[in-house]
Length: 152
Ligand code: AMP
Ligand code: ZN
Image (cartoon, rainbow, N blue to C red; front, side, top):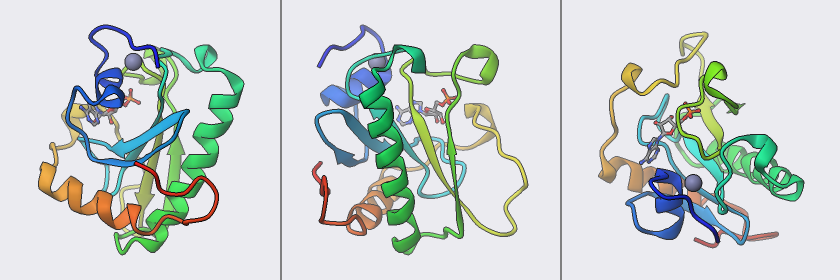
């Protein structure tokens, strides 16, 4: 794995920074977003640093989406409130990207949610590590054991 200095997602992937990890394989890591739009908000990131989606190898892009889909399924089974899911990727500053290590958001949605959401950190409060760990465990235990499994 190659990391980039001072990249928070590289630090999380390498274990240098705290995170509530839901899934990890040789290509991607999934962890809880620290400023969730809704409880259960996940990020799927490539293990190897790449700032924009164009820098991510195609096979890793495919893996991000495959795992994002699997996370959406797990969210629906997790007991967390989830009637629908947004898969969202901001590529570039003008598109709202804040962390320049490409990532796919997997966001549980439910009726009564506002019709739009903001992903800027100043629009939502930080969640507690305790809450994030509990939610991560609920989603992890709802993952299929088939396929790539639920390795962390
Ligand atoms: P974007 O605006 O698409 O670049 O999204 C960046 C996301 O990273 C935001 O939703 C932040 O809440 C999230 N984020 C930033 N730092 C951390 C962290 N240390 N752990 C988990 N999520 C983070
Ligand atoms: Zn990085």
